[in-house]
Length: 288
Ligand code: GUN
Image 1 (spheres, rainbow, N blue to C red):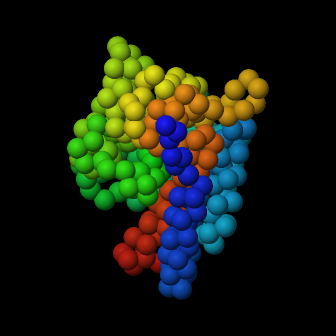
Image 2 (cartoon, helix red, strand yellow):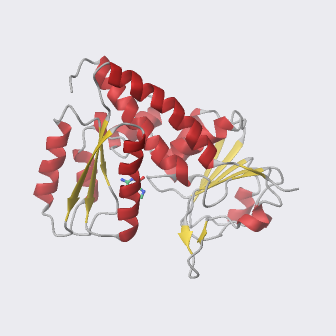
Image 3 (cartoon, protein in one colour):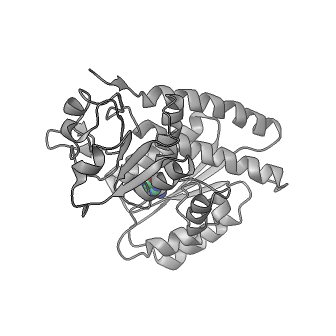
């Protein structure tokens, strides 16, 4: 058996078409959704991500502001800028690209963002909203995984879902999203005693460890749906996921490739959160 490929580019395109209609409706009402992206330092990978986020806003007719600081920026200056963006009615989403340089308190910067503009969904208020089922913003990568699972009509209610990785950006919120859909959720970490015993029980397996090809076909239940969140650069320059694609696709029922799987959905969900934020602000009567 060879698994069906879950095409993140196609799901992303379909999602962005829906967003384009919502942007047009907002613009007709005099509101242009706006995203501010802050980057500190010159981490090359972060620079590529940020450039792609700004470009995606333009493609959808949204406003974006790219704010660049040198590595040495004082914390007070960064926090003052976040406060100014919190108060700017033309900005509906604020994103601080991670990682921040070690001299800055990343948690303090993220908590300074108004939760109503926290389109990354990293603020404790939004994590709490996700945990309790209140409206908020969901972190983009795990939210994208949920959209892909729904697009391919993967049944979640009562399913055994296993999430490998417990980061605040992916693993933890992913587990909460699957739980909200009545899956039976297991979270595995790098300290899990017998990882394969858990992954082999999964109907839906999400792998977000940052370790190249750590889950192979022998660890996957036949017919399982495998969502690979990893993007790793190998010494030969090629990209690979956290799942060993060649062996996994012989066993899985559906699988995301890397690249072209989960990756393209992350920016799409950032756009979705920014449009949602603009809609909420418009409904609440906040004028740009
Ligand atoms: N760094 C790696 N992934 C992300 C993300 O989703 N958001 C932000 N702000 N920084 C990141």
